[in-house]
Length: 189
Image (tube, rainbow, N blue to C red):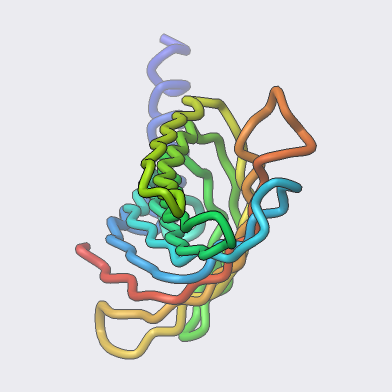
């Protein structure tokens, strides 16, 4: 008979905890920005795009994401010319801690899988063409970020975010990037 009062107390405690939790949140996010590579062999900043969904409560969320960056260059030198294209892609999952308010800061981090592809076409002065393709990855990495959402309408916010990516856990000195971006977040519910 002692089990019934214990179950009633446990049920009441669980119900009060559940009632205190904010309603679930689903938010679709998209941002564009610049990715500056901190690797010795990559000396440029590339435009980037990231799309994600935040799923959780008002204060903590899980965020699956997809990111894409591409840099294209054309170089002319005394013996010919070269066109190159480098593409980076990643998928990841982050845990995000958020705060409430019209201006709502957040911090987070997580794990990701990173892939890059380099394609170079060199044409010599004698019209000989050399093509070089190299694919890197997939590699496992981590990311950390912080930013803020600013509510501009009922379900719409603009966002600003800074982010650091370590794109390979096996090569801690190479393949990292610093990113700055801005975009839009839409609350689905």
